[in-house]
Length: 306
Ligand code: FVH
Image (cartoon, rainbow, N blue to C red; front, side, top):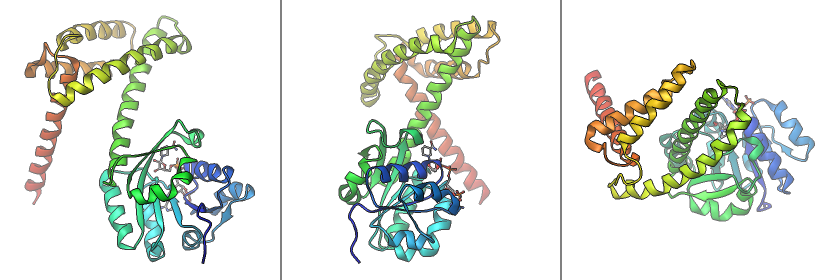
């Protein structure tokens, strides 16, 4: 059987899978779709997608299989019973999960003769198809090289390395960054909002501040890599004094202070570890130690439970 090289199958037609399939269709790819709840395929079929009656039929239709379901349980529920049909296929898994789940899925796919690329979508469904949006990939470079034009229609593909877990690892790290940034912005928005400043007035100033913060990150990245944190811009001691102003201003206006209190406690642990006159980048020493302590605690718990 011969294939159109750019033919693609999308398995999973929730909000994200539907956006992926719609974009592929728009860009002229022969797109076969399958979803557990078949009715979700209808809007795509109306736009030219080919509906598959079963996951097996969907896999047979294309050399490139994109999977975007809720989680890895859903992926395995769908594909395990028909895993033999994956032989010779390129599987691109855009389902969110942990690095370990991605590594296991890669080994599982390889054991059935499929080539596996894991991916993390760094946008929401409306951003699919925008070349400025990042699609992080890790695993088989062969899959990315063979299908780059198709995958590039979804967003800019960034290959992080051969370890299939890397895309999920970066995804987790970047979502953590997003949540802390958005919660910090919302805390600031609540604070100025208490004095009748609207979010739409505060936000342009906040965004301009974030571009200065970008510069701090660039400076501090080199310090983290070098393991030296010269406090020649602003020291941890100075930041601890400054965060008290935020805590006071927010408490006086009835704003929840859980986030800045956590930040202050982390800065104080950094100071207590001897980094008071170092830059803010030295907080990484406390965060890394936390990871080690957590790992040790878990290991002890596991030993204790045997
Ligand atoms: N939506 C987003 O903005 C984010 C952006 C970053 C990446 N995520 C991840 O993408 C995966 C899918 O997310 P989604 O937004 O499309 O999610 P839903 O709209 O809830 O669709 C879920 C699909 O998964 C199917 N599904 C669920 N359970 C099973 C199962 N046991 N067996 C087979 N399929 C299953 C579900 O099918 P149905 O309920 O329609 O029958 C949908 O197709 C996800 O990993 C995000 O973290 C999206």
